[in-house]
Length: 330
Image 1: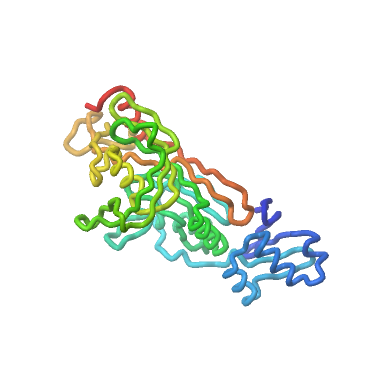
Image 2: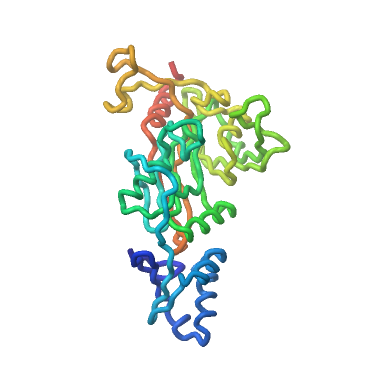
């Protein structure tokens, strides 16, 4: 695969990345020093990785090409479980996949159910293996949307730092109770644990700093508001806690006081089936929390190209919006 960008054109050859930085290196009086400076300043190689590659012989100069051992074989670190996986973006550095509702990103020790990490391990295995499963961020179990994975150490270190620097934008769609006033644009309130409920978080003066931006809104006649929300921090349940604190909990979020709603199984297509004990075409099930990651914006670890990966709305969110646009829920 050949790319172009901030680190220059590159080609993968097995475990090696080959780059041709040009005269900045071919004409350098002290080539080794010039290589180090180019890797750290231009290509943005994390210093920790640079030191390891130098120590292990993973930086080589061949003719007019710089070779870097960036694609070494690594164990997945988790058992692969084959199941359908929707890939939104992939190259040798990054993978972005859609996380469905009802699936955790990674195991929490509570059971043997498949997680997104298990499915990603199977995806890597099907492509030849040798890639460790490294998610860069997480989504709540019942939240849908894109999840970003790093496919090598360069990408992991770069993307982890981008998360710390708030350089990765996560944009969400949320359907909430009530009419959210136009004046509510920023929610800046620390979040901590709820002493009275192990699974819940709350706004607390002693909590961690948390900032949520509301970038768009659509009032729905049925008594709700569709919000576009951007996270500047990534606290557990942040959007759910902040919106509930402001009096606008998510539809279907019973943990934070959101109104219940029900989804007709027929609206999900024939694959949804019907609930036990109900007639075909007449079944319903409780709707999940109405939160979906619409897009993920980040810079590619090697090329520095800004990437925007969109994830279309799932059917249940479309149906809830349609119901509230038509009037109050039955």
